[in-house]
Length: 260
Image (tube, one colour):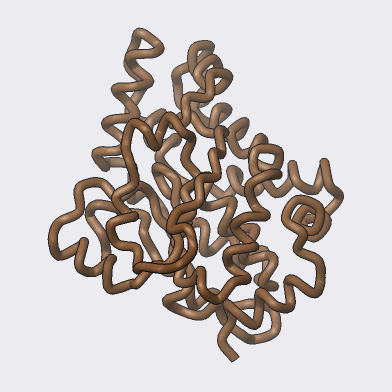
């Protein structure tokens, strides 16, 4: 089901990995903020029987818009929500990113801001990926939802790291990331971001610049992966150092999340 209240929501299931297996359906979901769901949508989400909501938003974002996903989480003995506080996005109020747009609020400036956002992800996620993988390795924590505000940038990087840990090829990782397309370009979230940025800058951004910020582009994720390799040598080394995902834990993760 497509959720009007969360346009980027989808099941990560079905993605192929290198050994011919696929990510199990109904175990890991990705999304943005759930904004004013209808009764039908809320019933649908409740039927997912989520056990854990992994919120990548900053404290400021959560205070501004408390998570509506929590009302759909199944009762469980474990904490129902994990706050990751990934402060590496213009929606999180990252001042350095606003300054990039101050210098150039055109399409070019928007592109540079997004590239810098993705370039910062490896460091921003360094203390946050371990709890996500710990949860995924615990059977009582799934089904699990990982989300941010838009559900494409921070969530996209987290899901890319998860798919790599599961053995997905880089082509499959990019294909899954690009599935978001331009679904947010004409959304209420885009209009809201345009107002926020216009108020901060004292002048409106070009619609085409907003479209760049609200879209997904291969060079964005490629920039994040290149930054990982530049600092850690490889994606495998990054996952082992920041998330403890050595060969044994990756093997267990595949048993939990992959179909035979």
